[in-house]
Image 1: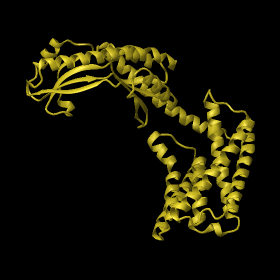
Image 2 (image 1 turned 30 degrees about the horizontal axis):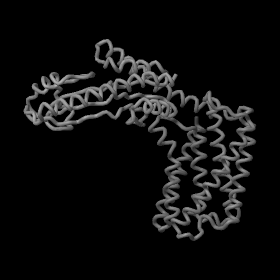
Image 3 (image 1 turned 90 degrees about the vertical axis):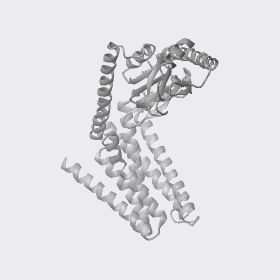
Image 4 (image 1 turned 30 degrees about the vertical axis):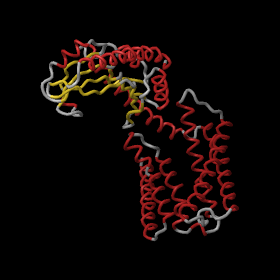
Length: 396
């Protein structure tokens, strides 16, 4: 634990140095390296942001290596260390070795925890090598781009073709060495500490999802007992909640609504005059409107809507595909605030003003046309609900 704290402190010091160098570069009007410093600083503190927002802690070694790799290149530019013999090549070699190590750890974790991904040792070493070379090429493209943007094409970051090629050679050597010795290290169990750490963090994320899921299902059961759940939505809600990786937080099968409000948008002051999860006739609509007293009178058709929380982006993609295929074309990702929520939503919608302060400004013929259109929408919504219920079998 003491060792971990020491390296975390070192990481924080390096981050402070990066930010300070950014301020210094701004003072000198060195826009290229000011941008590099602040961008590097944001990358360096990304593990802190990850921990604060997702409560996911990155291993201290990964955190240190990330800021160290960034610092190597920032120091080279701001402190003019690239003028020293071989500094550029050493910095490229070390940074690429660290990138290769990151890739190694990510693939190792996926190989252990994901049932769908598996690599043998030779394939792993080959992937790490190719990945590192690719990252080196992207780095050289970035150097070329910054020269074009910040120095009008004057070669500052990318001095010459010879310099670029030696940088790529250094990147390739680092990738090959880490790929080979990293694969051997995995076989010998050298990275178990990091693997155990990420395993615990993944379990914490999973535990939070399970706790949230249990609370949501308990709340749903109570709502069903009190008959507060839309009966037409129940088959879909039950089907989703039977799946271990999903749970619903709210649902509605779609409805026709007549309400009055002081002004549109004041949701809390709405007074419902009529609300149906089925087709209605013109007499029901007229009776509902007769209850109006004060405020705007509105006729609404609202599409079915389901909010579904899930544990991975893979599940999001599957659910959105199924929703779209079932006719819910307005479905989208609703939230990333610590959890992933998919909103399943159809296109059926009417928002029509009818009158004010108890007085109706439309005639009966218009009301009948509006009611007929609404009923046709309800028919389509019912078909889409049945289609969705059937298509959810593809999530099994």
